[in-house]
Length: 376
Length: 240
Picture (cartoon, rainbow over the protein chains, first blue to last red):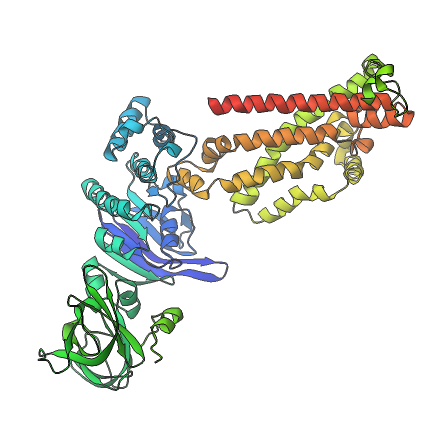
């Protein structure tokens, strides 16, 4: 199965650009996820791959087959692309039984009746629904419909499998099961898969690589571990998992380290930086709530850590851990801890390697910022 | 009641003047029977043609990327706002000005009346099919396309099948509308192409109110039978 190469893909809708020159390559057999909030352009990208939308410019190729190329004005219609797609609503044809649903693409490809029978049986077997072949879609549960939709997308051995939020209509428990099942099926088949979701947990759990999208831009393309541990931008850090952000200014920078004054408190910290930072840069310091810990003031401190003085406002017990809201200047910081019962003035210890430095960005929406502001 | 009595008045018990004469008069004159037959042909043929046209118009206006799809929707709905007489006069002149005298092939024939009545019925057919098309998720079309069906195959295998109930409903509706219609026929019809509506008008002018009532009754019976049969057919289809 071939690579999928997307180059400079751009899509305008009536003067609004929803995709800005997006480029990426999906490797053979890879589970590739397009992740982002609604309206980020991930579904448009998938539609362009499927041929349901015509991109304004750019090119798409699967292996040696060029599907779209604006320079030669080429546009292969969806029916000639031989791709499999599962839709969010499953889009099973309600007037046909499962077997008939699966037979449709085979009929169009003029597969003989005998061969159709084995192909349909095999595909339904793969999703564990061979015994329901003569039911109608409305007689099945949501989870079963989702599996039929997948069987229909696989029955004609497409080159690439496109999945448009296929799990979003399932309830939470079922979704987790379906996630594992789908991932296993995909790796068994070894089919190149493009998966669209706004659910970060789903993306992290299933993907070989994730492309994080926002406002029609691709922010970062990397394996799940790297996306979570080393987010490329503050937006990625905000969207994937939870993060605390504190604005600051670079006072001095030399080599791989920088001294940053935090605006909330005037405290200065030393941070390791991967990219070039220059004195006077406005930056945002980010760290994840589970990477830090709390100690009482006056306790012994580990070396090479950043220590911030803060006050605990609220404690929430969420079962596996305690979540503390800390007042730091006018900001609220979120901290996870396994120890409960802490109150009042504490030290927030941030290991140096847990801190990321980004150019100043407003990543927190206005509503959230208002909720998090400490006014008293 | 009026159709079965010689005279209908509050001053006399209607059962004292019962008659079949009103019906007899209609069935005695070939011209009157002809008008019933004409009405059936116009409504029958027209219902099919108009419903097909309405499906095409709806699919183009709601599903295609055709530039003027909104215009098509307005065009299909516009006759609703037009008086039947205006449509009649308009078509009359349109036929008169058609090049190479092709208009004369239509003028005064049943086809002219089908076109006239059909235009009047188009908005209701459009209105009854359009919600059905909108209800069918676009993902069903897209799924067929990705699965390898070109637009035509998708239309024939998916949309047509799913639209059948709405199509039958539109056909029943247009049949009923075209059965009752008369105003465009005043300009488009000739002596041979009278429909029930125009015959009723004629009889009314003559003062034959009993026969007008009789024709109206026949019209209602035809409509009721048609709706009943269509309902039975649809029921049979659902069970299958």
